Image (cartoon, rainbow, N blue to C red; front, side, top):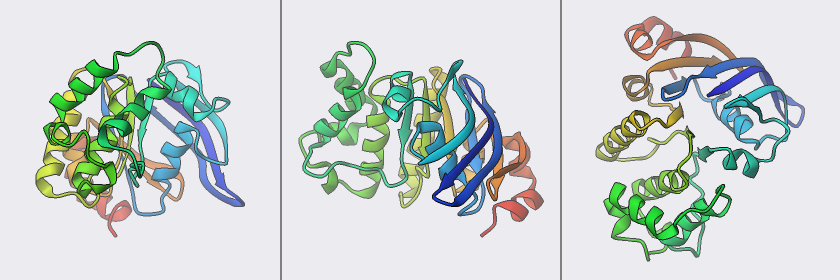
Length: 234
């Protein structure tokens, strides 16, 4: 589904990713973990086309992405949930969801799509006409995820979805991500909550100083406390 080879990325003169290579298979959850500043967010921003400079190869379902703008990548079926959520001020929950359909490929029945989101997220159903920025932190995270889901993407990139969320909502998100995987959606999950991510994922990849330093099944990394301590401990 996703193939990255020799990816380099920069913020200005700061060289952040150094020849990074990574593959994600269709219908799996891959956890990308590591310390703060290791390059996790830069990796998914590079995949989505949001870095000022990136070189190498990034292929999604066989299509080379690096020459494409972010909206074209979205139209291929690649969705992104940023760490900061980016709920648009002045817009209702419904209108924020409608934004997720603007660049979608092909005709999508807006009412049916929003009805499906309402069934998946009962809390959002009750608040469709409420200003999105007035939701609680957990509800805003749900809205950000729902906005990414609404156009039926083939893969979703998630940046720190559990950050600042109550434990009960974190578990609800985990159940949702498993359901999406079972329905054939591929997930790349960047997460500081390492134990939760590893219990959720099929495979795990550790990034350190802009390079991949470890990859294994998620279960194997969950059991390997020495590797976690070496690369993931604060």
